Image 1 (cartoon, rainbow, N blue to C red):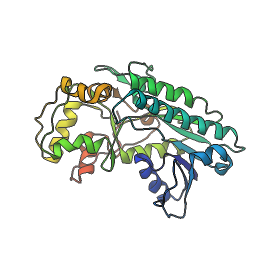
Image 2: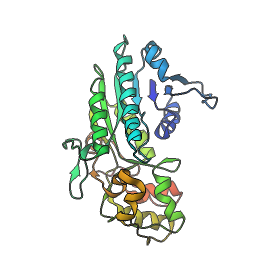
Image 3: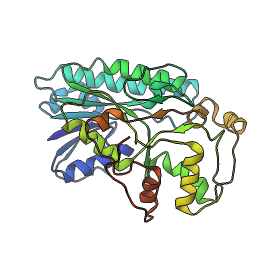
Image 4: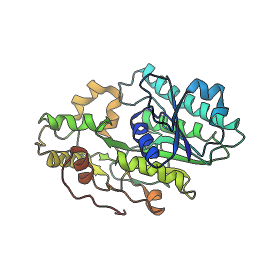
Length: 309
């Protein structure tokens, strides 16, 4: 297969590329700038967003396109930052949509990144792909706008990948979440009752590939493990696997002045279940948090496969 990855130099993209190369596929990476550090692999090609916008014929005949582009939410949300977060998502989806319109032979499938924030937050509800979308805060509004623009992508099998917290040791949220425990200062954040929905980076990569390969999968797909946990359990599991104490408590009132509105990511959550992936037979290599953290930390804990919710 020939696959385009928009945002292929990001955290998830850097794991997708070697996975697909190992499977024998050819990859085109769309990125903002072409740098000297580009891969020299024979089946990896690069193009800029300007190339995609001005010369869409360069992706004529590709089999699939994955768009993971968008500014990171992990920064303080000033008015300017919010505008940048929205613009980065709207612009890249629009470029993809318009580029595909001009192709004679469109890809069979497009996997468009979205976010689990689209469900809003709750302490007691469980969300799957059939749940209603709720605009409650900036992240949920951002996800709502993201998916609305994605609907402009026509005449392909469109997957809206609603991404949870992706756990990987070389990027994403995990290095920051685990750092306090490495420093013997880990513990409960806020009430500890808020839900954390997560997915191991290896399962994230495999799920994207699964969505591309399985023609029956379309529409919203929750990229989350079948084992979401409360934040207190997340921290306690980190502590147990890393052999560190779980004692330091950071109350909500101490977080909000530091992080501002972005504190909603830490202090509120949602219990998201990957029902569609499970219904279509996807198996998680890391369905429970302990096995996921153990792999990231290089610990010997049994990995349970084929567990279903």
